[in-house]
Length: 640
Image (cartoon, rainbow, N blue to C red; front, side, top):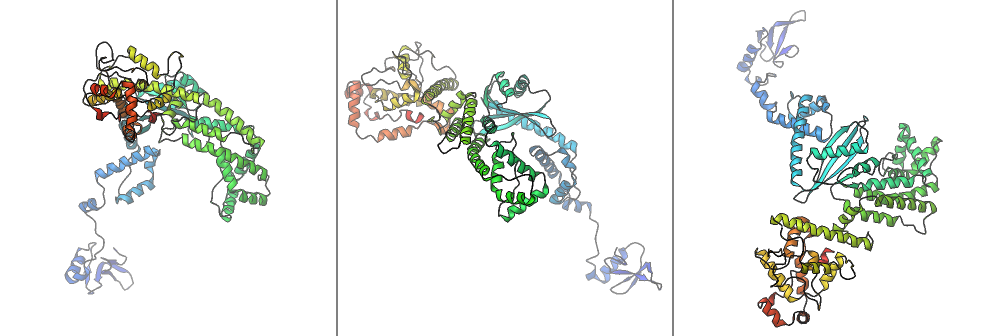
């Protein structure tokens, strides 16, 4: 009802002589007709529709029916469930407090987005219940992934919350069947006891047993704190200390009691002067705008914050003119750095910048970084080498840095780091190691390759394919391949590969390899002695007898006459199943190299001297002269 009128002002109350309104009678503003009014406008609306149809369309607001209200305003039950589930995921994923569902602002946002003015947020009890359900579903999903993998690496660390509560976080890392790196948290549990080595070891064992992965855990990655190192000794896992943490500890040790300490102390006072005073901070912003610099606050270095010292130096260097102006105008006790101190900080920045780069490189989460540890440390050692232009304080810093970092590197798990570096195609030349260390690493890789070949062959064939004790001929071939003999020397695996790639191979041997390859594809028995990568390169040189079995020597797998596994087929199975497409042996490359050889008569002469003539080879191979090209020969140079 409008003030002094009804139905949108179409009817007005009658005025009395004294100026008051008569609430019992109304007058139509269109035709001036009078009507009695008894708190109901039905008769008045009828008058408008009958006498004034053009004016009866806008008769004021009308109450909506239940059907109309539900059709245009209320959200459905399915949409409400989606909103609730989205809230639960948001709270869990972004670490929001459960009490956020009591926020009136969030409720208004959802009402405006959904168009439902009566929507109410779910209660805290509902959110907590849904959180437990979500955790159970995610745990079951991650457990199914862990069941399908063979090896799992764990990383863990203790940390303290803002409320001074201690927590242990443990994460699992593995590579799934699709060759994709997977990482997720296993637990973030509150710990109340002191972090002694025994307690830390029990925590990691409990997590591994809870997820049923104790037998699958290969390595445990932690920081280099003493309690963690001692706890790792009590566990049946290989310990991999965090190299980024080691590097930052080396930086901290190198900065202590150095020639940079006095300049760094003045930097900390300057940062504190502007951090603790809002007025000083505003003056700094004004100076930054006047000099056309980006508005930024100063950073205070903290020993536990990686690269914080470097960031503090950078920001002071960028704002040195503004800081000088402000401190001079204020006549403060805090003085600006001198030119000599600024030069020292510039040299320190040049020393710490490579450390920052290596720290961020080794701290990646989306890729495997263990193969980059030794090359990165080698890069730092080269940068820290003394030069003739270095002042005394820089030489001292470099000496302390290299000495401390070398000690910490030697105390880490170098064996695993070396093997990881050798298996990375980017660093397989192992230039970060000495020649003696390279030979040791390749020998270890060769041993692992043989073990993996045996395991993969046994699993795929379902039974043991051959006796692990080789025959006399195979022992002799293995002895020559490993460089053994009267002098008892040992030849490195890369040298074996190079020697095998340069040595001419007899046609009879090539024919047998071709026949063995065809038989392996057709799943036919082959009478060729099984051999690993080291055995296959033991082909006899000019004037030597062949070490592998001939057509009349039987299978070479033992006295029981069991069929041996052809080495190329066995190595193919291992590469295809374990190393992936990125490490596959390139047979097409070997074939293209041999096809480009134009002087085949020279090869024929070499083969004739070894096998006794061309006619003998034709008789032995059944006239298959056209298959003389050994395109199936392994490209051992590609494995170096």
